[in-house]
Figure 1: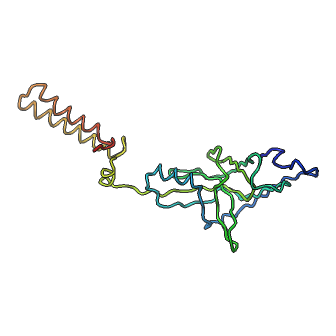
Figure 2: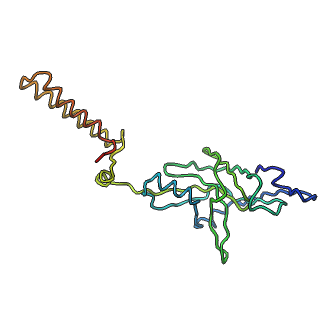
Figure 3: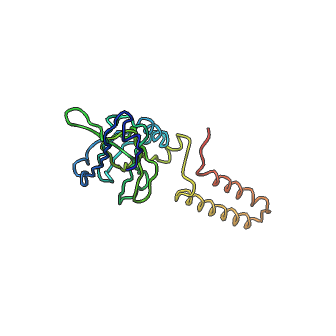
Length: 217
């Protein structure tokens, strides 16, 4: 944990300054079902990236749960953010993202993980650095986003189709080459000149280059 002296010690307090950090391993067994609430701005960004295809989110606790405290009583809005470095053994995969979270207490002893006031400054395969503008109980979560996969017909109706260099796109290219070769053999067998061979072949190549690009009305 890294923080500035002004954050720890109140300017009007002449007494001793105390900083504490308590790590609680194994809390994932008790908090596995605790909900995660994303910051509104972050949730909007995710929905824009996935164009409304975001269906649900599941998450796992990557790090130990830690509690940080200082002698300064004003811990809700720190003068400068406090920095935490968490170690974890799991590396995020596709459609997975690491979040710096804190525990938000609710009514009747309930609560949830929240991202407001905490953000990721850097993340590697086995560590994540977080900064928070307040002190509480912190951890690192890895969220997996379930995204709806569109069919070819659904994608075309929305104005886009196929991903370039995907297996489907490669299959289309193979069909293109097969048709081009067939046109070439047919033209030669009928004694057509070079121009008549090039025209249909070029048209097929042109259409294949457009496969995988956005469709326009």
